[in-house]
Length: 439
Image (cartoon, rainbow, N blue to C red):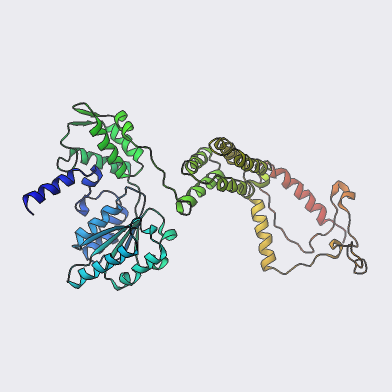
């Protein structure tokens, strides 16, 4: 490399964002993901044996997916090529696969083709990767923020090792921030920075496991400061933190995970947790109809007759949200969620209908008893239909002591919570009356 080229490369690297400049050069510099990068784990063993084949890295932004792909190439000595599934079509994909074949034919180490946002490739594009993946021509490394079981071709997924990256811990992010402040060649060590630990901890907390976001805030804080030395305090970091864009895919696992968290928090009667997950859904752009539909279902599934007012309230909330819309309907959603979370819980209506339907599917079909059959059409009396039926409103307390099923079955088991306590008492009295019917 001549002097001019070296200077050009150095200037280009200086213009990169801090997160790119601080990208680890070796696997030992990598921070986080010890659950699969610790000594003795699978990925380090594959790297040491130079047996890296097809891999999919799955995890939220800023956890090191792209960095790991680069490190795989460095550690194994293979050539590296990166394409982005958002901007690349089938033509570029085929050119990259041909490049990989040419590399192998020259006797080079197995090249690494890194596909960022691999979930954005359609099925045809993903299928195009299969022959070369199976032949071992390339080491395919895909990165995705979406659950690959939702978004990646099953055939491709079955031929790949899947590694899930977790958000970085606050201590890991603080370590990255401190390293960047001290590093004079790639980081911010040329500035006179006086970091306050509270500021670094605040930055790590607000980054929510995203190293790139934390380093971006640090760089912006330092470059925008107009004092020397630069006192890195909480206020300076707070001004430099950009508003977080919540990850959300209406057809992916974020959609289902947050809805699941909301419903399970309400079922568990944790109002604060339920309100947090409701807020996450709203801020992420979740469809309001989907939320209200889930709340109506929950009112019957998890509360039922322990509080009979839960269902009318949920239905009223659904109608109100349809009529009002955002942003005002967030008030209605909050009211409904709070009420449902604090209502006594019962799933007896759910288990009762499930048990009855399973009996219908699997059990012997029970004929309708003669006295319950329709006796209004001509000729029904000749068949005996309706004979012996006792009109319940004429019976004592409105309960006629007669057989309504023909066999003994028990599906409804009320719980000892809320209004269902009263229903349980009444049901016990009714059962006793029905059992004592004349034979």
